[in-house]
Amino acid sequence: MSVPMTLAAVLVLALAGFLLARHRALATAGGNPRLLHSLPAYYGWFGAIRVLVPGLVTLSLWLVLQPLVIESRIAATLPPALSADPAVRELALTDIRRLAEGLDIAVAAGALTPGAAAALSPPEARASLAAIGVALGSDVTPEVLAAAQDYRTAAARGAMLRTALTLAAALAGLLSAFRRSHKDFRARNSVERVVLWLLIAASSIAVLTTVGIVWSMVSETFDFFAKYPAKDFFFSLTWSPNFRGGSDLGIVPLIWGTLYITLIAMLVAVPIGLFAAIFLAEYATRRTRAWVKPLIEIIAGIPTVVFGIFALITVGPALRDWFAQPLGLGNSGSSVMTAGIVIGILNIPFISSLSDDIINAVPQSLRDGSLGLGATRSETVKQVILPAALPGIVGAVLMATSRAIGETMIVVMGAGAAAKLSLNPFEAMTTMTVKIVGQLTGDTDFASPETLVAFALGMTLFVITLGLNIFALWIVRKYREQYE
Picture 1 (cartoon, rainbow, N blue to C red):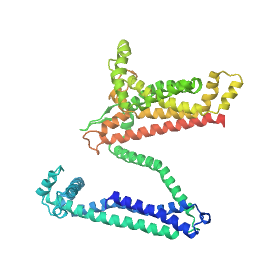
Picture 2 (cartoon, rainbow, N blue to C red; picture 1 turned 180 degrees about the horizontal axis):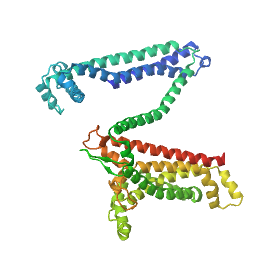
Picture 3 (tube, helix red, strand yellow; picture 1 turned 30 degrees about the horizontal axis):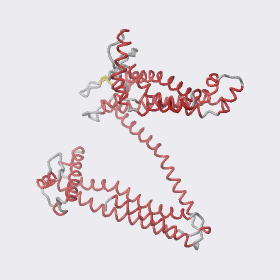
Picture 4 (cartoon, rainbow, N blue to C red; picture 1 turned 30 degrees about the vertical axis):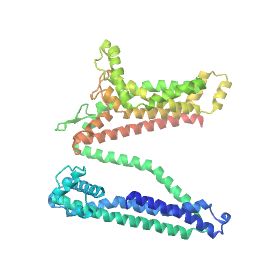
């Protein structure tokens, strides 16, 4: 039985568990729901959960462990020529899996019978698979074909055992739920305990994801620093990777380009976004707000590649023709200013929308009290509303800053890929995110410092973002004390 069919069978058993557990609980109470400890639905959900949990856990574990067990057994039977080198063994296992899948497709299509698939020679296997449109990337050797046939046999047996064990676990849960469902059983407590664990598991996903990201970055970063001096990485002023040797992987030019572009982006986004939020929240009429705010938020839905094209075709040439060339500051359309302005435009709706919601959340009593004391509307906004909303506004600015730091496509198309140190905003520069993509794409050796440096760059970005978070928390706590 296939996995979807097995899953469907478990769901049917869960439905049966719901109905049977609910019926038995009502039967033990003589059909009177008032005699039950919990509502009848709780007994039904208890029965469904008792079926789903063991069934789905068994199915999930089997799907994870079966390929590992089969591949370890197949790898142990490979000849030394295919199993001595780990890289060659992995390639051989990949060919075996592809060939086994091709044989399964041929059997399912009716081109081969199960018996014929187990007795093919290498030329017959290639011809049979080519006849149904399955292409193999390499020649089929007798060893690989024999291993693929063994793989199919083991996978088929595993599928039968998987179905049997999953259904057995689900049936055992069904019987257990049926036996425990009586009028004095605390079904609501059991169901709520399961829901609590589900909520804990859901909330733990973010934490575990963060831990996994940090661990992957840290492990590869230590591997990089084992091959390249940390002092040269953090203090060298030259970025010149060379996969043939003799690389200079100094991060200073990349940090400078990242912070320079982010600074310009924030100089554009923060004033415009914050002033737009103040206008919408405090000055605009309902009719004006109803069409202005959606127009601003449309910017957030535009793909960044479109912004990149806008920077490349419109903003870059305009800055070059109107400012850079007349002032003698450069003649390139790709520049820090181009990328910074476009990234700033991209971040306007984030700051505007979030700040607008935060300002609207300020209690109306603060506004009324300020106006009652004789302050003007502008004085109320400046001295009451903005200080009260400052923690949320700082969070909005932080989110926009993080997005500006992590932007890649606009920088590639608008700022170029030159890693340099310069104060001229009309020169081409680049950021750490662009170089991370550049170092991890193409035909690269993942064991070389030139590739591993991408993880060190990512770890540096993580530390910078963490520093921004700490700084924002410090500001929030400092100014929040005035309103406690």
